[in-house]
Image (cartoon, rainbow, N blue to C red; front, side, top):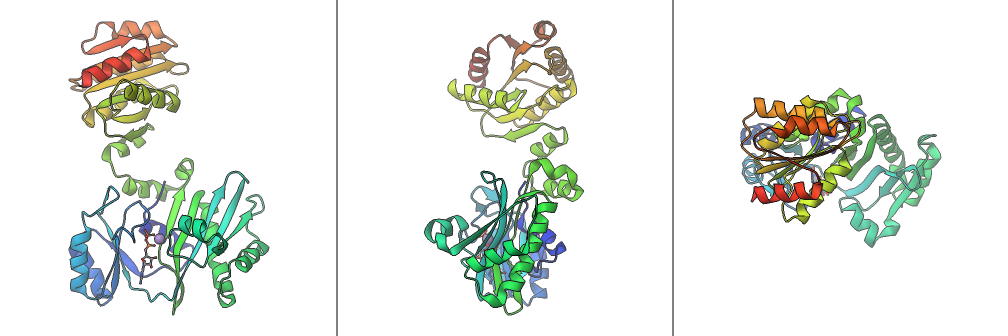
Length: 375
Ligand code: GDP
Ligand code: MN
């Protein structure tokens, strides 16, 4: 899960990293109130989950309250790489003398955490790495031993950063590392880490958390509520469904991520467009299946292809979930079902007499029918 800048900054602040003063606004009125506190000298930053907002016009400077309001009018609803701006972070304008990059990420091939420090902050770090590789200092950190002073000394020495900042840089890097470990992050990053007359300040913040670690921190559940853009996706998460909304009109339910992917491929091969990725997981109960159908029909699909390979998942249990969905929901679209494996015959028998249900034996056949009926 990737956090929005303002959410990440809150966590950075809790760990003692200096961040600019500022607040989040959802309306022009709120922007006005915040801008007044800073005499109109503010930076307005679109809160969307994409990088390169600066280049796309999502980071704008104002010198008066009126200008801040005008920029806010332009930014609310603005589309940055497919993400619509609904929130603005309004911050005091920093007087930036120079910009650094500081971060930690995971290097799977060396099974270590890597600390990264660069004097070329503000730019896309991938671009710096490609054009000026010597401007990026890296230091591997063995997660078993943690971050040691000598790791930081090596990093600072290799970074060509000014010596008088080494103490402050180490301090910030240590705090970032603590966040990395405590939040089980995949990436923590400050770009730019701005040098101002008041010292180093995290002008931007990025924190990506391993999805499998979210359950450990309650605050992350609340943050995810905010970052998930689609209501349907939020609901799916609540029921433990692995769901991703897509643009097509053929709904898909499968058990196992591999099955779901293979089913999506088949829909494509048959000339259709999948409406979603949905994995009900192993051993899905009829309640989960019923919920999966409810979620998919909400996104306006034209047909649903349910592709189950019964192992731990029992085909009869899946069939019962389909029956419950038909009894309790108004479903006016055809559902194509392929059941194979554990309790296959029982499952098929349950579905035999139902209206709008087409039971098939092969997945290719099912995908073809689902695509044809969606036309
Ligand atoms: P990104 O492009 O999505 O990474 O957004 P950033 O938050 O990094 O902003 C892009 C650029 O805007 C930064 O490199 C800074 O140069 C500038 N910037 C961001 N925040 C501030 C700020 O508070 N004050 C000033 N003066 N410039 C800022
Ligand atoms: Mn940035």
